[in-house]
Length: 121
Image (tube, rainbow, N blue to C red; front, side, top):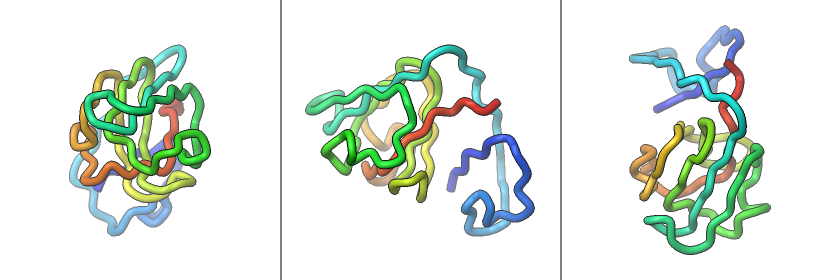
């Protein structure tokens, strides 16, 4: 499991939605400046319907008619995909670059319910 933690205190693992108290490794996310922009696509290799986001989206289906995101292009900033709406479920960090398939950001499935900009450094 991956967890993206923002600045703050976490007195126990349940505060970061963890399943246990074990941390095996960690790293700092590259600092980003300026705008945040990401394009998400309904099909692999940037095919099908596309929508661009520059703000957080707690419920992706309100703006994107598909429950699955099969590819993405991070133009600016870093983003977190969440498996379910309202920033719940598995988390996937996407930094600047192209992701031709959901497996390239570590997803076992293409379900994305919400997305959020990484901006708290």
